[in-house]
Amino acid sequence: MKAVLDQLVEKIRQATIDPHPSENIYIENIFPAPIYQEILARLPKDNDYIYIEHPDAILPDGTKTRKLLDLTDNTISRLNADDQNFWQQMKAVLISSELQRAILEKFNIRMLERFGLNWPEMVTVPIFYRDLPGYRISVHTDAPYKVATMQFYFPKDDSQIHLGTSFHTRVGNTFPLLKTNAFKPNSAYAFARTETSWHSVQEMARHEAQRDSLALTIYLKGHEYDSSKEYK
Image (spheres, rainbow, N blue to C red):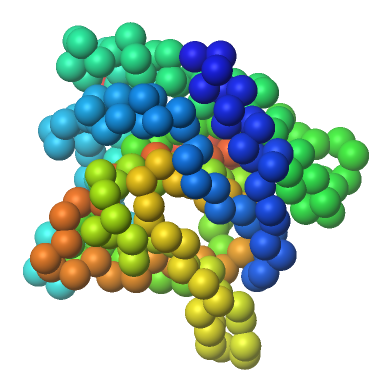
């Protein structure tokens, strides 16, 4: 998996920063092609996920539209036995100090603005998401305990290309759309959390297939997501 880590780091370093609304990057062919196909083949099954309770992910009739699964030793042990070794290796890549450093250094100016020279201890948490028809998330900047996020898109083809994350500017109390990332196979985006990192996801139509992704979120230590209570 060293080649996978090396490619991720190099792709991040080479990515062009879009400064609007705050620094973000978008990358295609983020994983080696064979690894991407293996990711698709080994994605968790529906019953491996847990539903979230966010109001944007609950329809008026009570239907829940987003599931998640954080990638930990505990949750990996619950996956299909044939897939566990692969996800253990991928977890090691995703939570590695090398990958965290590459993401933070990509947004070094924003990090210095927020923390100065003495950066706090941080924890990287990989979380699978499975979004279902009706899912949406309104414009927001992310909670202050999040430092940066890199989200990997996992579609099988280009049929959901319109379902990428959107970025917005703010004009008074309105949030004009700046762009929407293409939800393309084997692509990813990343951004540093700031007071202007406005983003959203448009509502998924009822005919849409599930939307699979993995968010790699860097949290301030002590504030990281942990699903262990959900599995007791």
